[in-house]
Length: 147
Image 1 (cartoon, rainbow, N blue to C red):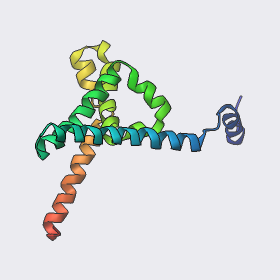
Image 2 (image 1 turned 45 degrees about the vertical axis):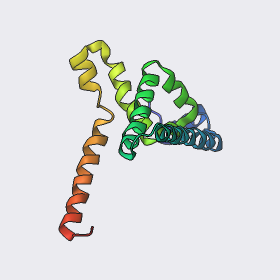
Image 3 (image 1 turned 180 degrees about the vertical axis):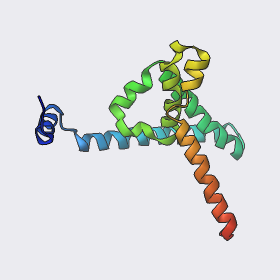
Image 4 (image 1 turned 30 degrees about the vertical axis):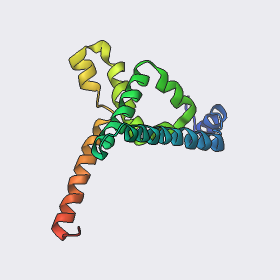
C-alpha cells in the first residue's frame, strides 16, 4: 500500500499540533535575557570582589559553564530548556549542555569509548568549524592587512 506525498503531508499536518509561536518567542526572550542578566550579575559580583578585569572575563563564563554542566548532570537544565525553548541556546549555556548531554547519555559504554568518545559529538563540529573559520578570517586579515 502506497501513500501519495500530498496525502502524507495532510496526515502529518493533522497529527502535528500547531506551535504557539508568540508564546515561544516570549519565553525564549525572557529565559535568554534571564541567563544574560545572571551573567551580568556574576560580573558585578566579581567586580565587587576586586578581581582584575582579566580575572572577571575568565570567572564569569567559567561559572556559567560549571552551573550549566551541573544542572544538565542532575537533569534540571533539560526541564528548564523545555519551557525556555531557544532561550537556553545562549551560546555559553547551549555549548555546555551540548558537551555534557552526550557524555551522560553514553556513560554506560565506558569512560573511554562512551563518555570521552561521544562527549564532543554535538559540540565537536562547532569547535572545528569555529576554529577553521577564525583561522581563515585571520589569514584574510593578514594577507590584506585590513587590521
